[in-house]
Length: 393
Length: 107
Image (cartoon, rainbow over all chains, first blue to last red; front, side, top):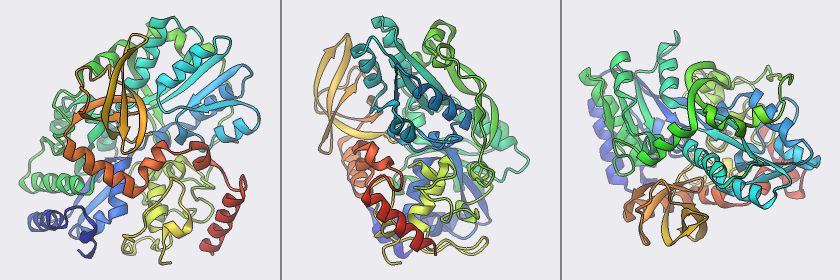
């Protein structure tokens, strides 16, 4: 409880922890789906504030992490082509492909540009009608509507030199895959708040009922997480399994209808591969046939790439909640944010990056209790220095 | 990229047939598309993700979240120089120093 004092409202945090403690009569394993929530949990030591037996398992909710290596390699191949301007969000620059990353492609002469919004990529296409502009469209339900809008507007504005490399994924089929895995230990879900800001909560009751698992829509601030845990544990102790919204200030039940309508217009649901996990049925989107000519995979021939996963990277197990990052032999030694084996270490939302940033020097051996967090370890950038990782070390 | 950041609408205008706003994120100002939240008004706060307003947010929640993000360095991560943040070891003297510190820490 000593670290409760760093919460914005320590009294409220203490009350929530006490409520959870009072409710728990046996062990429970909950999965937080969102990578942003994982960082809040590790940064604030929330997993260590919880009563013994209440375990938080980190889910696959980092879009950068779950983008398959094959798609990264396709991005690198397209970005290397003469005449192409390849536009990406900044956190894809260092994700390793089979033999290089986008940062390296730029160093080798590729025209790789970082955009804040997919509409920036569309503007670049309008400004350079003699070049092919490709946008790297990855992400969950929060990111897909903005990318859909860029595709829609390119069509409306007659911008013919704009295409997208799409690798969008959906949360509910991932929950289904986790619950049907023979190794599944998850008994309750903290659903990702901002995904639900777009999609609402309508996709979850069927999952909750089918798998008899509580699903609590949860925000990403420390108190949000504690409240999500409190409501999930309360349901579990009562034998309930419903969908509950603990983040109503940003999640109306119907989500954002305009964004959902655009998703339906531009995309269609498809099977998708998740890095380290494999193909999950109906877990992603691709461009609908109407927009197929704006699909970069159709416009450029990117077949026949020899993709090789690094054998020593165990991020697939981390993404499925089967392994904690610091239980991996490569963690913090050969694999660091600057020399990452996999995307879970390089992504700012990755579970391995969270552990490196906040727990690296105190990383326990497997099975040992985790060390206390370092409340003053406030990062100043996505790439931590060792000093930031543990200023008292 | 995954982050959705609250911001305050400063101005609204139609641009290329699209409803756009100038939004202030605790000092960083960006263009934001309002097509998914068309009735958002000047002075209101919204959750913004990759340049799109996705949900309205009350001022108190928005300011609290902005404060938390600033404290965690997440605003720098979202709006800072992405090439600097992504620079691999050896690409600059500063990075080379950090790489050496990494090796020290791993020993």
